[in-house]
Image 1: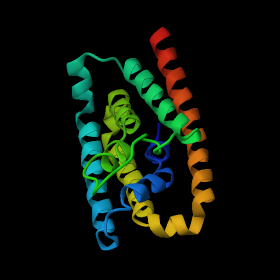
Image 2: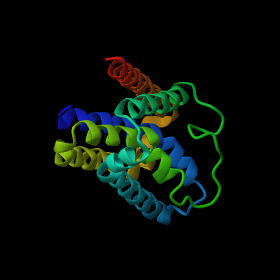
Image 3: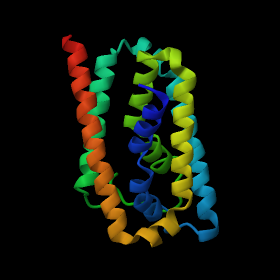
Length: 194
């Protein structure tokens, strides 16, 4: 995997456009002047979590004795479940819960931006091609930066795209994530059998 492919994969998995409705719903009770601060705070929390998984993930895998194949298959299953919920939404949104008050760390930072699939992909990248750690860092920072710009502009983007546009984008991202999940799963099965 090269840096551009890693960047695009991480960006699709982070799904900033698909997260706009969830961010708006989570922030509807937060005063307008405070919303940008809350979004930036949550994005910084998410970046810290993702960097910890990028740099410490392989040590966690070694300590737990988990194989790369197991992480790949587990990440594929989680990604598939999230993608299915994007394509076929449930009551309460992707995370299936109603949010009250100002969000702190959960659910905006984790699991929306720094979700289990993103963490699994980061651990896979460093475990399989650890010598490219700087490339993976650049890919992560790029995907995070694009996600940050999109989520900080969530209110204007929601007005521009409208409710139907946001739904269409979320379904499209869900379909792309389903394909990524299936490919991850097939790669994991192929590695475990080969």
